[in-house]
Amino acid sequence: MSAVAGVQEAGGAKPAAAKKTARVASGARARRVSDTRIDQQPAFVLHSYPWRETSLIIDAMTRDFGRVALVARGAKRPTSQFRGLLAPFAPLSVSWSGRAEIKSLIRADWVGGLAPLRGEQLLAAFYLNELLVRLLARDDPHGELFFSYARTLRALSLERAQREQALRGFELDLLREIGVSPSFDASADGAAIDPAAWYRVDPEQGVRWVDEPPPTGAEYCVSGRTMQALAQRDLAAVAAARDARALLRQLIGYHLRGRPLNTHRILADLRKL
Image 1 (cartoon, helix red, strand yellow):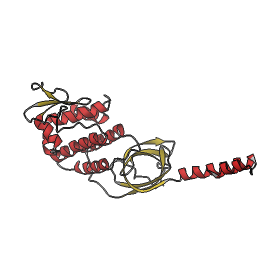
Image 2 (cartoon, helix red, strand yellow; image 1 turned 90 degrees about the vertical axis):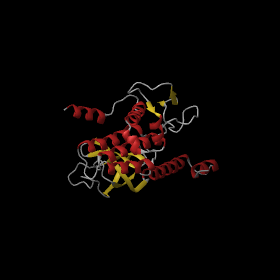
Image 3 (cartoon, one colour; image 1 turned 30 degrees about the horizontal axis):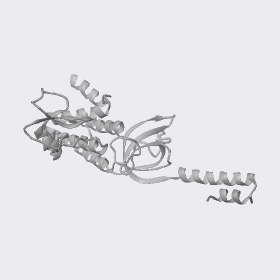
């Protein structure tokens, strides 16, 4: 029983005193909530946008808390401690406080660099960020996906073949982490995958055997050999298989509910130049 309830029940306090006690207790609870603080959390900035005249709201991917929204007050001032730090793809250690949907960023420290990304490498990095912003709910921890994201960022500065493998691995990790990855090691009826057969990987109904080879480019259709590579996470084979790349993009597109990615549109426009 609370102290306020006990006093009221005993009849030994005047109503005004009880109200004052209630206000004090309420204020203490509010302070406990507002004082909640997280220190030195590994993070990457996914996206930021202006807030008021001098501040920024950043969307960050953190190791232990998933996507979080943080307000960096005064970040646009020349003397701000945050100036130059809150850029995408820079490994950070961040501290914040608050339990509201948008927390208050208290401190950000740069903890190491990545090789500079240029051209299609940079666009691929923005592709990763856009997927996380669009497909991850806020305040939902995804520790394994955080590490997958960090590994993929590092791999983007490598040779094209290694970049492609890293991107396909990240797409697989993302589908698994948000709980929508199909089972690639068996069809919906439980039958083992035949490498010589063809399959349709339906986002809603699972993996179905196809009676005859589908037309080139048929939606959600892949060879049994590709299915086995996906199940075994053979990223070299997955990256080399056009049907694997198409399938992963189609599955992601389905869960984006048909809303196109800006990075895909930009890349398509660049290739027309």
